[in-house]
Structure formats: structure tokens, C-alpha cells
Image 1 (cartoon, rainbow, N blue to C red):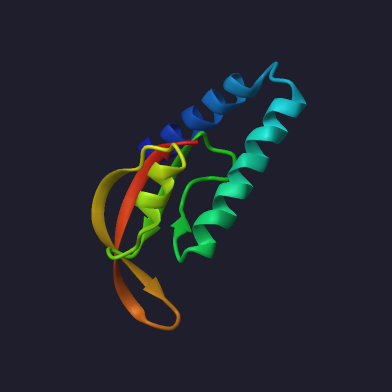
Image 2: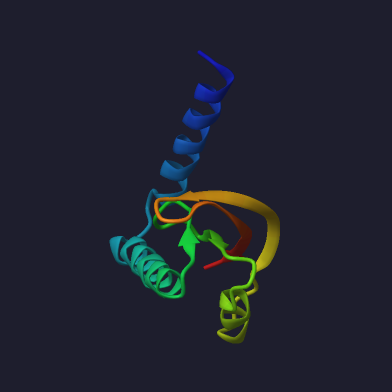
Length: 103
């Protein structure tokens, strides 16, 4: 078994352990909050790259986007992770900033 297969297996087992015994309503609530955040970010031209339901959000947006400021005003704490690139269908390769914050 490769190193990455072991890491993936460990991550899946950790998530199973974390969710074990969680009320279904709490899990559903987390997924609903994630969906709302995804709609908010997409409506402002950003992309969420996290797994649905993840408590930690990873997001990409254009460097000129006001989305991080809007999230900060809404009470979130987006922290810039790095500047990167994204391939889009219409514009080809574009520069983006990646952010992380707790949901």
C-alpha cells in the first residue's frame, strides 16, 4: 500500500470516528451551512475547493475580489494561504488567491 493510500485511509477513518455518534441533525446542519456558504461564494465569483460538509473552508477568488472583505464583515476570518492559478473554460489560466477559514 502506498504512502498516499495510507494517508487517505487514515483521513477517512478519522472522519468516521469524528462523525460517529453525531446526531443526524448536526451533520445535516453542517452540510446546509456549507451549501449556503458555497452559494454565497459562487454568487460573488469565487470557488470553494473544500469537501462538502468540511468545517474548514478552502476558497479561491480573483486577487481583486472583495469577497474576503465581505466574509470578514460577516464575522468570518479568511486568511490568505497563497497566490496560485486556476484553469477556466472561458479565460484559460487565471491568477487566484487561496484563503482558508472556519465555517
